[in-house]
Amino acid sequence: MRGISGIRPVPATGTHRTTMFEIFFDLVFVFALTRVITFMAGSPTALTLAQGLLLLLLLLYSWGPYTWVGNLVRADVGLVRAATLVAMAAIFVVALVLPDAWTQGPGLVDAPLALALAYVVGRAVQLVILFWVSTTDEPLRSTLRFFTAPVVLAWFPLIGGALLGGAAQTALWTVALLVDIGGARVASAFRPWQVRSVGHFTERFGLVLIIALGESLISAGAGPRTMAPVSAALAAALLGLASTVCLWWLYFDRLAPAAREAVNNVPGERRGDVAGDAYGLGHSPLIIGAIYVALGIEEVIAQLTEESGHPGRLGWSAATALYGGAALYLLSRLVFRRLTVGVVHPPQVVAALLPLALLPVGRSLPPLVALTLLTALLIGVTWFERRMDRRDERPRKS
Image 1 (spheres, rainbow, N blue to C red):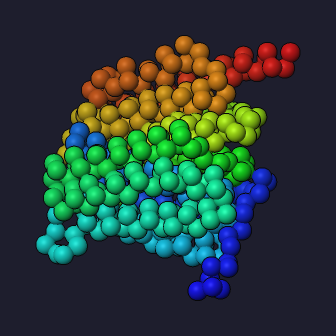
Image 2: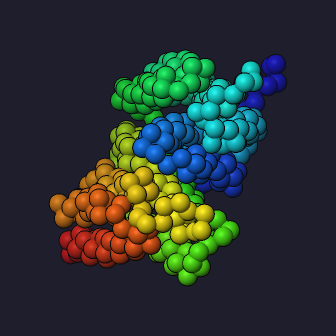
């Protein structure tokens, strides 16, 4: 026991970057996110889309602390790596059972309960790691005193909802999410987290986003085996590619580097606050928006196949995923920009709201036409945002 207690985690330095092990961990995590698409695509109704949003929020806010762990200590070394592998296994279990998240079974541990228990294991592991790291870090220990209580309290409605199922499950899991997020926000307000390496922190969030964007391409290429007509399905796949390129460009071309520089320039005592707000409040909805766009592309391709039962028009559920996801991505991008770079112009807000204005139109259009309309809109917004970025850069250069 004495030998184990003498093994200390390896602190991360200010130049630390994301490790291959962390990327591996994040791939498993994004696999769980993509399984939410499978869950929503099984029966794309308003309720299912809302339940999918709940699952995405639970997953994203359970992943965040692992980013802080990797920013404080090397996640790919020693006992921290071993503990993270346990968490990875828990996330993998969540991913496997997630499509049946609201399906009660006859066994002792059905899919909802297995999901809840695996989720609790993943959260418990991160708390164990953080408390171990904090034995020589008094500011971190102080932060954890505020952070732990809401995290643990959220486990009770999570497990209770899994046992009850149905509407009670949805309600209790919503309570669990609110307790978790609300408590964590209050905790970070009193005792902010520390950011040791801005490069690692921003890179980690960017990598998860780009993996999530890749899911849009997977959805475009993994449609049903029987396609009719083939030309329409291929056109939809190419439109999905174009839409994904726009989403990538809007974040990674100029905003991501500018945000990293802005966070790096924040004084050390405030950096944790700014980074937590920007990447917690602004970045997570970006990922959610990308996931919903991926679902919308998948629904368009599904409706262009012989297996589709409603090829006439896109419909409300698919249009909400496609256009609503794009609007969420664009609006979240502006929130992220405001919290980092600090400049958002009214025309940018109008452009971000355009997908919502076009949603009623899109739902009445044929699927391929609806996707074409959204792609054209995203291309236009990307062109407009590039012009705005160049205009904002001129005063800094002069």
